[in-house]
Image 1 (tube, one colour):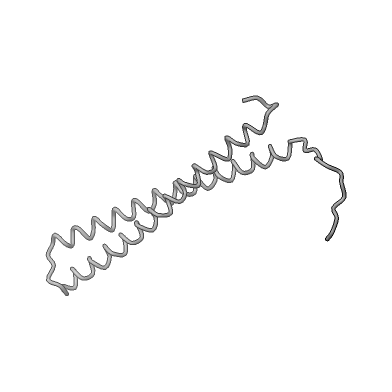
Image 2 (image 1 turned 45 degrees about the vertical axis):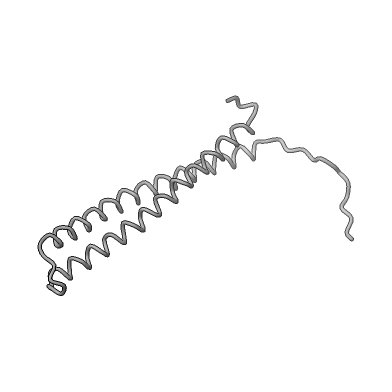
Length: 115
């Protein structure tokens, strides 16, 4: 890539921004699923502890595993989302700088006519 042709670099940056946006959207979906897992696991644990449905120790262990897995997944995806958002911001700033450095020229100097 040469500095004489920023249009190719802008195209590459836009493709990278689209890929990063897809990653960010996937992280948001996993974050939502993690929150649901934490809530569901907590509810199941409370039901098990209170003995409302006669569930045993296996359900209690499963609910604890669900809560812990949800917490781990949530933390991981929140971190990835933050990094991805920072990368998107940096790419957008670079794209704006490249667009600003292009020597734009006027195509036509004809005045506009209002109808």
